[in-house]
Image (cartoon, rainbow, N blue to C red):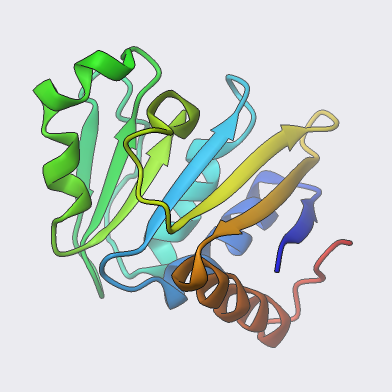
Length: 162
């Protein structure tokens, strides 16, 4: 089942991400899509915080992959500067088989390389800080992840959108 959430601020976006971070499991893959500056990295900052990662979370635009340790290992991948044919060279397929959860910014550039069971999150800027998150699970595992995420959002009192 899909979900849509709206966030009025960067902090609320991080809170939404933290809710996802608390329910992620090793093997989960989250594909993030959206325009430059839409809030993908801000959401990942929250996911990392919710997953127990310490330290600063920055976009891996120039390093391509960042790894964060916490309750589970998170691999944060940014494909902005890559073409699909570059993915093998950075060991992308190996990351998908690693022992953590994988968060992929600009995931639409790797659509053919992502598992069929991926949680897709489209981030749309609808105002100065307002963001809409359109969540679409592809596969049963991703559907269960959305259900856990929704329950976590509701448990902490954040209001889901439509």
